[in-house]
Image (cartoon, rainbow over all chains, first blue to last red; front, top):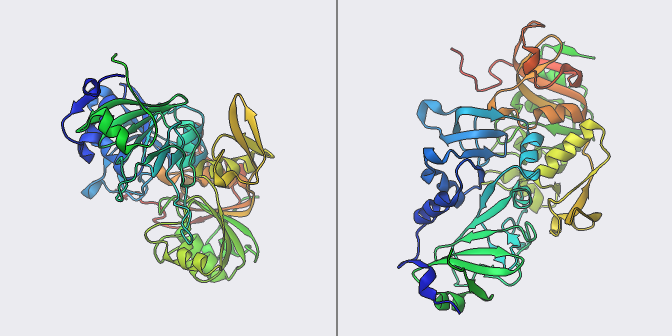
Length: 224
Length: 227
């Protein structure tokens, strides 16, 4: 068994912005990326010019710029969260079927999504609680989950009640099967796949302490 | 047959009770508000509406739903912070919902316009939205059979039309316009501007006029700022 300290990179849990900075740093230069609504949107604040990342928004644009302010606001130029945004030089517009072909056809390198739960083998649940009376709304979540080459999830490790969101099998309705490759949480970064869950690094806890919180077997990543 | 009409009322006059109506727009971008208002006034009811959402606030599609004119919504994302009219109808059991992943919605509309009888896609495989649907393993991946969505009428918005009905759009307001124009039997377009035939660069036409039936000019249709 590996020693936990070998993968611990921070003495304290990560805040939302620190986590966004970490995800941004892990995106390879030149990537085409879709950032989901909510917490994943924060990642765009930490992408650098040198990384030369192209952002996709599923309503029909590549080369999306930052949120529009003041005079820049244009009702015809919004993102998937319906927030006014800007266009960068080299931007392209296309219709909805082309935009989803970009996702479904495997052309995006990475999408970053929020989640309710991720299973040990990378199943994702992020669209519906399944609660009686809840109005279901799925949007592009299933297309992103199945279409991007890599699916990163950003979430807190634990629910408000203290339950792990990394689970043996999702209890919420699924978004996609075996699609998540990486999970960024406040307490650790997990790599998921058919062989189970590997811990890349921990924040403010040891692997042993993490294992007590997460009900699936965790392996330490071998040093690269 | 292409018709230019003078009013939105005239443009939607042919829409009958029980029609399936595609309405363009993603949020407010590209939503043909004036055509929807005219549809409201023309009285057609028992409609099936295809749109990404199920109306926002107290305008456009939301009002059509509020007034009980929509029997069924086919959409991907009905629940929004300001979708109170849909929420109320849904909770009262007064509107039917076919929830479709957004990419399936777009591709099913595209398929209808392209004469495709159906397609297999990994989207939704293994989820509750694929329950009861035919599945296959193709290239090692589970895939779900999805069928085209046809419509009697499409209501869309574009920036400019020329005399042949060729269309160009504006920024992300393009969204569902081109695929809905192809999928509907009769496509009605509101545009900010009608330009002479030949004034649009043929290399830059987004929707060829063959897909377009009725055009009405509505000043200020798009958010373009007049210099």
